[in-house]
Length: 438
Image (cartoon, rainbow, N blue to C red):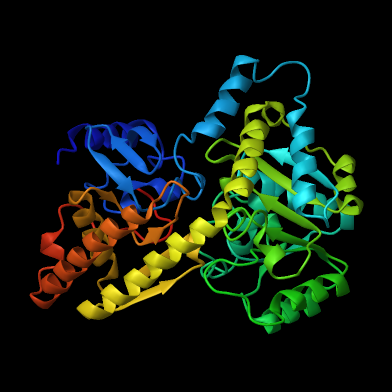
């Protein structure tokens, strides 16, 4: 399997693009630098072609969770191409944004209004701006990962990495104004006491409580309800970040499964099946506050994003895509568990089924992860310790993938027993967290 062109492109990227990639999660060092192909020439269904013409079944991150239907989905593409043919932007507004607002409010009856953007990070910044405007307060309390903007990274200003347990460790607040120290605090998932402490100390200052409804583990009984109650007591806006969890376990926000209604919910990733679109939906009493602040951008008014989202939602609902995602994710998680146990590998599996992941619970876990990536590539799979199922994944894909996992786990165990893990790497061990790339 040749990777000459792919590796050459990585060297060009290092020279001209700071950090090599626009997204940390797509950097090749997160998998295995020197092995991971990093660039694609074509993607269709569950298949990916790299720059050297190698073809893989993608059993990894599914476009970082954006391509929930699969790559180049025919129905979404057809709708987008029609929008392109009609002119995707002009001096007037596209009517599809009104249709999308109506559709999202239909799926979430507690919401009455929506605003739109084109990426997850900026949509969270919009939600927080609305909450701060609505309450005339500054402090935000968070649980989970919510993007790269100043308001979020402010939690790490003057602290010992307060965000370290929230998906990505080592996020530097470099470039974030030091004056934002004390404007963002954290609490832990399924730990209501940690939130109670923050609320007690900052009750009159809290503008919003922001969290993901679910990600790695299920909420304990009463936890989400307790957060809702504390938000009400503090007169704070309760925001669910559904950028990752939305349109996976059900058609809409995962919070609908838990019977807890926020004041605002934010969507992106799966919403456009890979086309840039994000939505901030909420109660009209809160959302109307957007008119008091300046929240505006030219590219939020083009039509491709809303058109793609409408097509995605219609197909997702008609095909009951969430049922397929749950089944595929469960098959893979069960497979990881069983195969790891059979080979005596310390494999820890977690995540909701549509956002599955495992870790090698070993001191050499980053070497083992890179070996897994390396060996799975030779078998025709883009694979990491993450699996984000798509509607395009078939049971046959999962079956052949798990056969390959069985063989690779067996090889990793053999190399571990013989002390040859590191010397068997063709590239570098996987990176962890946020670090400068050289």
